[in-house]
Every structure is written in C-alpha cells, then in structure tokens.
Image 1 (cartoon, chains in turn red, brown):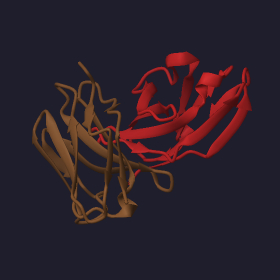
Image 2 (cartoon, chains in turn purple, orange; image 1 turned 90 degrees about the vertical axis):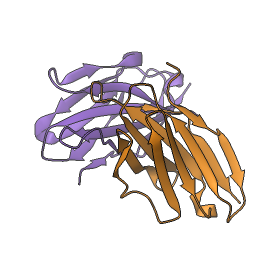
Image 3 (tube, each protein chain N blue to C red; image 1 turned 180 degrees about the vertical axis):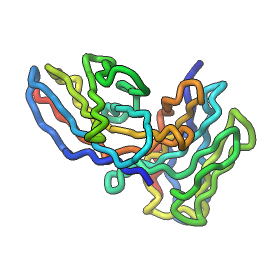
Image 4 (tube, rainbow over the protein chains, first blue to last red; image 1 turned 120 degrees about the horizontal axis):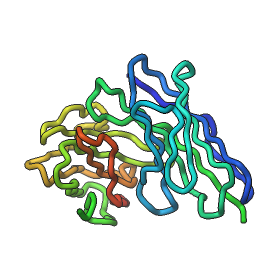
Length: 114
Length: 113
C-alpha cells in the first residue's frame, strides 16, 4: 500500500520568510499529487495539484510545488509567507491505478508569527 | 453547486448512543469518501464509494461503524454504540473521474461523553 511522509510536524517562522515543506511518498507506479491546506477550524481546501506535464506546479496564494520523480518527492514552497498562511498543510497521493483513492500524509502545522 | 454538504456540524452524544452523520456530495461526482481526523492519528480514510458501491472499507475501525450510500446524492456514516474514543472531526469528500481532486465538506465535530 502507498504511504506519504511529511517530515516536519511543526514549523514556526516569521512573516516574509520562505517556506518549504517536504513530502515523500512510496508507490512505484504513476501518481497524481496534491497539497491541501486546512485553516484553523475549517475544512481541507486544495492548494495545488500535479497530474502530468511540467513538474513545477503553481497553486493559489503564491504556493508552488515541484515533483521530482526520482526522489518520489513533491515539496511545497512559498517564497514569502504571511500571517494568514498559518494553517496545517497536507500532502496527498493518488495512484492512477487505484481509482480516486487519496492517501494523506500526517500534516505539517505552520505558524507564521506577525 | 453548494459543495459537499455535511450534517450536523456538531454532535454531542452520550456513550452508547447511536450517531448518524450525513453527507451530500457534489452533483455529478461518482466517488465519495469518509475521513476521520484526530490529533493523535491525523486524517484517516475510513471508507470510500464509487458509483454508490463501497470499494474499500479497510479503514473502518470496527463493527460499530457502518456506512451506506443508497443513492448518488446521499451517504451516511453510523456509529452504534458510540464510545468516547470516537470523538473526532468526520469529513466527507467527493470527486469525479474527470477531475480527480477531492472536495471536502465542512466536517462534523463529534463529541462522545
């Protein structure tokens, strides 16, 4: 079965700092990849997705992620964070051969200090 | 479309009582997922349906949990009897083959006392 690892459980940084969250997955076949964000007290919302093509994908709110197939990684980045980026971030994997089943990582809580 | 709709938003019940959570997926979506979120275990997939048929229920914790999808626009997750360790936020999500990204509902926060 596939698994998803997010290396950082908690990240604290100041406004304007750069953010990078790691995500690695274990699955040998082709996959769709996602990053979701959950603001305090809210539901999960899609930040960005990768299905195929350019491995550098851009999402909402200035986020981007890079798919590196050889490393089974899909790291999330934002050059300059804002206080409003305080949230929990989830990486998710969907093997293309497994229907639409999404497997989530454990999440990374990001706290941006004003 | 109003998105994925879950009810109730909050539920407080006593141990031993039956709890039923409801979900209306986005119209036209043919996949429906039930997730449970806790601090200790994160986001866990409990069960998912494709075209109203349960495909994978390996995440359902035990026989006290059951889920149904009688038609394309409605699903229930039932816990009977409920226990304090079932306290969590339960999310429903839906997606389609054409656009496989999952859309989540607002969740039901369940507290079993």
